[in-house]
Amino acid sequence: MINFESYNPTKIIFGRGAQKEVGAKLKEYTNKVLFHYGGGSIKKSGLYDEVIASLKAAGIEYVELGGVQPNPRLSLVHEGIKICRENNIKFILAVGGGSVIDSSKAIAAGVEYQGDVWDFFMGKAQLKSALPLATILTIPAAGSESSNSMVITNEETSMKLGHRTNLIRPKFSILNPEFCFTLPKEQAAYGVCDMMAHIFERYFTNTKNTELTDKLCEATLKTIINNAPKIMENPKDYDAWAEIMWAGNIAHNGLLGTGRQEDWASHGIEHAVSAVYDIAHGEGLAIVFPAWMKYVYTQNIALFAQFAVNVWGASDPFTDAQTLALKGIKMTETFFKSLGLPTRLSQINVKKEDIALMAAKATTFGPLGFFKKLEDKDIVAIYNLAF
Ligand code: NZQ
Ligand code: ZN
Image (cartoon, rainbow, N blue to C red; front, side):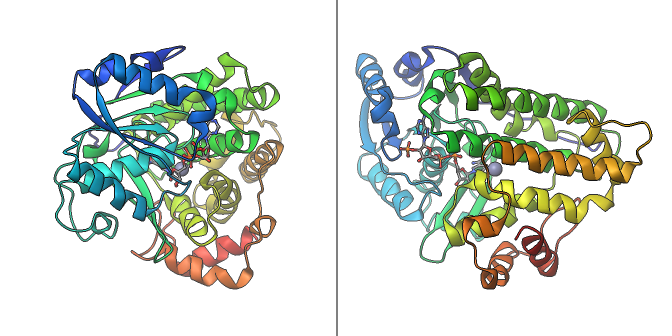
């Protein structure tokens, strides 16, 4: 196990009716917020009205900014920063999924910074302060509701980049599994894939002696694998959604990476695909992760065999570790398919001639990953495996 600092200050308020507390909880911090949301799902579900009612009841002033798109755009972040400055707003309330939350985090990061907030994503500046924010999560997936990261798309350069800092962890996040009932099946599947990917990025490590976090990762993955078919079958299964929603948070709140070196190559490889093709992040991961696994598993066959046995229940006393390792990868891919996810770039109409461009974008800041360090040529090979 390697040395670590564990820090996650985000308070989680979980369960039925939890959204009703939003006004009262915000009152502990502020009298005025930027109310930031997406393309309208919260209006259809009634959550928008509930939030307004709760803000009014608590006497909290608000300025609204809707319109966040999946793969949140830098231009809307700029607009949010301007609104906050003009209205002297010092707190952001994000209501939606990872895209809304990341857009809110970027606004929070940009308001007090004199330069362009994109500087943080390009590694040109170090974030020193950010406005506080809180979230109401409507889709379990990205884990942004308590993560230290934000991912924004610069639509002018077709670059999708992330930035990590503890300064952007929300003060509190409200998670009510009932919000998930209105999710389209494909969004539910993307979310499941993304949270599994957040665990894979941590599980596949070269760090030795990580028994506790190995087992926590395996238990969280098994919980997701057990409950995902239930939500696909019955989108109003509260108990299954509760497991998925909590697992999605645990997957990315930092706990599962403690004491081990994390990888994150597959996320970089996927972000280049969603930057160029504007696909959903979870959809891209269902394609990239099995290919990454096939490309790197020989680095540590025993760990991949452990994954096959402990997560997927693959076991055969007469089978060698390599066969088990490959079986685990196959079972991962089959599971994604069972959720209706694509597992090949060709299925989402990616053009073969764009592979070099995407690999170049993925390695803008150098090689990716730690489990196996991946240069441009390795990433081209992974895209080809995924084709
Ligand atoms: O915009 P609305 O109308 O709300 O619709 C959204 C959107 O179209 C819809 N939706 C959300 N909740 C719903 C709902 N529809 C019906 N009922 C509900 N309850 O779902 C669509 C997708 O929303 P989005 O926020 O884009 O999804 P997700 O949470 O998967 O976020 C994806 C973004 O997060 C980034 C991804 O790269 C991507 O840009 N990530 C952020 C991370 C972080 N900050 O820590 C880590 C992740 O690895 C990821 O990279
Ligand atoms: Zn992700």
